Image (cartoon, rainbow, N blue to C red; front, side):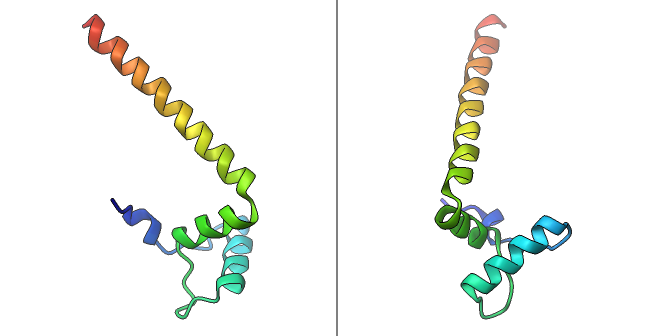
Amino acid sequence: MENPDLLVQVKKDTKLKDIIVNYIGEKLNPDDDDVTVQMAVEVFAEDFPEFLLAVAEENFLRGYQQAFADMDNATTE
């Protein structure tokens, strides 16, 4: 299973994105100078894993909450 969103080029439309894209570009030095979301995930995983872990944990917990809410709704209807 592949996520096409990971291949999207990151646009530098905020100051933070500008800093991050420049950092990733310098670190990975892509041939076409494009930085993708996948590259950002890889660099964050290596350089700032605690941030990525916190986002993943939050997403996981919200998924469980939604699943239980969906089960409750399905059984009460």
